[in-house]
Length: 293
Image (cartoon, rainbow, N blue to C red; front, side, top):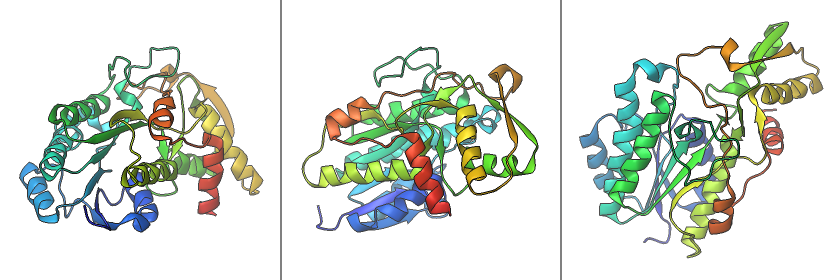
């Protein structure tokens, strides 16, 4: 492998893709491919581009993430989240390079009462989760050197996400009803990118742990209501108006796609195998908001 590796990032505008671009520049030559350069719905195009670019590391930060919309756009969701990762894995195997791929807590049904381990039985409740699980399996079936990193409740100061939606609604409305019976770990895209950077550094230094599937979220846990409360507290600290928050059950806020009630992921394996751990979600939220200021 070259002294300065060519790192291909699939995805340009997504939250994680943008965070990776900000943080990985010092590790090698970044090749960032958006949809116009790498259309994940076109298998032949993926193969052609990978053979032309011949990267030393492939990071798939592109995904179909419209959870509710996926319920009636199943074909597109599976094309991007399931078929494309398998093709990227095939190319990684042929080029003899590693693949880093991001997955989701939504591969689980949320019925477990404690945080999910990597080996726990998967049972997605919606099309998005099913498509992401199919992508995981496609990569595993190919057998390339890979890291599948499951994360949850991703947010940043860019794009469309819970943080930005709450910041807007909390300042516009007198009262806001937020689901309080779904628990998980809000995970800043910067946390995911920082952890990915650390993993790449371990690999480059010959200190890689076992390859495979790992959980990567912020430490701690809360509900969507608790996350909204923390966002509201930050707004008040800035002297901005903030709505009254009212906790509600998921049944009071029906959506096309069913969400798991328990999205908590146990991330101890990543710490044990790779020596990489994450900050508490509240600490990461403060860091994110400091960047936004």
